[in-house]
Length: 247
Ligand SMILES: Nc1ncnc2c1ncn2[C@@H]1O[C@H](COP(=O)(O)OP(=O)(O)OP(=O)(O)O)[C@@H](O)[C@H]1O
Ligand SMILES: [Mg+2]
Image 1 (cartoon, protein in one colour):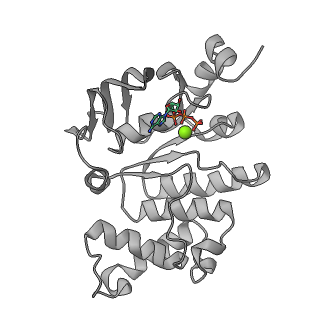
Image 2 (image 1 turned 180 degrees about the horizontal axis):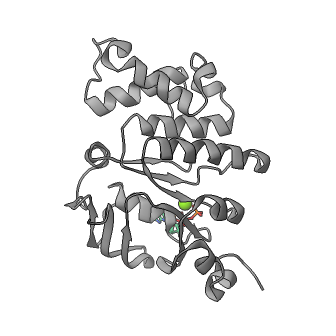
């Protein structure tokens, strides 16, 4: 079977700094990919290219066999490639439940001024998804009142309403207290398994990478310097020196 996502020769520079340096990459269905790399290595830029937010200077992105390089983010999402953000993109004035309803209505193209939101979406799916990420009890509170960990979960839940095949999560545990990170990731990865979503997450905490990834890709200066099993990549001397900061 062909790769779920594939990039060929992706190239991009910002003001002379190469942030994507001829990236060839393939992700298979069912993988749990952790992307590691120092600040500024190009991890978010690569996600932005794969999800249509930034266009590369050259190269191609294929999703499920289709060339999506020049497609707009909203089209790419409808093909089944969803993402969550380094800073969650929520509708802060709305309740948690309404955030999911808006996400679902957006997928169906039902957002309009004259259709009540709750009529436009499958209420069962909304409730199931709230339960899946443990936010059912918080369904009626404004998103604004959630602590950071629950905001991250809400962001993921909203992306799940798009019924993705692939979910790219940019630092799902950033801004969350270290003692809460594992619990958050347990919930997120369990949700991915249950919905059979292929997962790719950016993470700085190596304990989390070891626990949840089946594969690790290490970014250094716009290139994938190492890509393989967690044991292989995390013991790679260049990765240890330049990514993990070992001396
Ligand atoms: N829109 C932009 N315009 C110009 N430069 C940018 C833009 N986006 C990112 N950069 C630069 O490109 C480089 C790669 O940034 P990117 O955000 O991809 O890194 P990252 O690996 O995600 O880092 P972090 O771990 O801090 O999130 C950085 O030097 C950044 O300053
Ligand atoms: Mg980033």
